[in-house]
Image: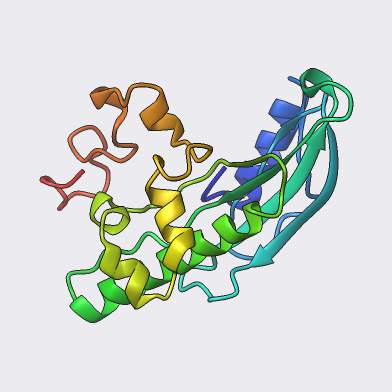
Length: 193
């Protein structure tokens, strides 16, 4: 869950709690808005933590991770779950836009590197990565991301990394979560998706 505020977080916990979900984290952070996670109460949760990104964040973004086991996973199986909402600034100023891209890629690489340590891992969040960022080898070189970047964005080299949207057939109608033709509450963004 992303861009939660304390009031909506409390409401979600109460409402979805009645439907069998709970938060792996005990408290909401003190930031004005934040990310969260809800997990089926049929799963056991261990090692839940919220941490800031090592490279920082201009937007108070952080990384949540926890381990789930039991329930439909069966005995002896566990999955390390990661969630985050990475930097999303796109600015027409080359310097600001470049800094946001650098932060976003570094944040993603922190997640990818932490996931390598788990037998089974799942990232469910908003990377805000643009197609040109994942296809640009110069980004990997500029940020010294090397083989980890290549493995994450070249699935033929690392078939265990799967983009759920791509694996579901990449339906065009579901490509954008923010579509200015449908979401016009800010105005001024008529041509962007």
